[in-house]
Picture: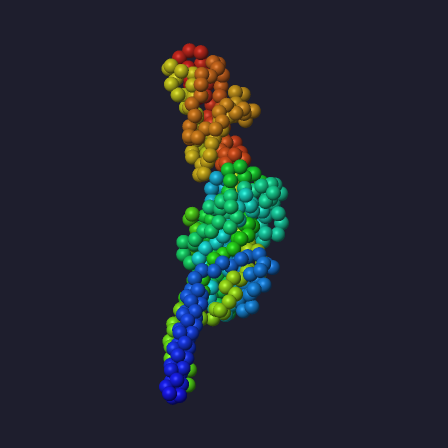
Length: 212
Length: 155
């Protein structure tokens, strides 16, 4: 009898632990699957996201003078935007979408591509009427890139990644004449959406855009 | 012992599936901290065109010289043009010009009935948007309006 009871308890224990371990395995699978989903990368320093990050360093998106924009803006038209994206992480990061400020958030004009001396009569408050193309009245509207951009791991090729965003800057029809032949610092993205690093990084310099 | 061996046997394959799913898009991702920030606000650069150059190829032609005292002014299209403005001078090619037609969308404009015994020269500007306007073009050739037919002649 004692032997039989012991075997029964042992059987129950085994069965319970199997269930527990199966649940743990499923949870691990879920974590793995979650890693494959998109996550949003905020851009404002000091946000809670930055504070939470212990081992993922922040991306940097910077203006660059080269390559220069091919399509230049004019009143009622659009123009190219050039950026470089730096990834300090030891793994590639893939950006799939950007989140834009409102369409009433305007760029400031500068006299040269160094973006150091502002252009008189062409400031954000003037306003310059230069905004992100397809931005809306709502802050944080998300726009999917035509092609996902993968920035190489830190110290690897294609990091930083230079990108020309084709015709993603827009100029209003009432832009002042002072804004002609002017370089613009575009309003900051509110966030970007990215996924876990892919195997192959995008070759720099790259061309991309969002079209809606 | 049997039960613990069972735990390993059951959990390990499923856990491996989870880890493989994670590694398929970046095994180095930590299990937490999915949201990270840029070090600073992003910046990006764009550039604008220059104010448009003055239209070229401005010409004036007697529109219907045997029947009307009108002149047709034509010019070459300017890229991204929104509208054109036509000016006239009745003193000389280098005289004072006054706007006689604004908001012209086409690349030509025909006057109304002009004054007899008067010489006319024309210039044109182009606007892109509402505030970017070129300088005036070169003057057209001279046109003269007569009281009798032909009502319009050109030297």
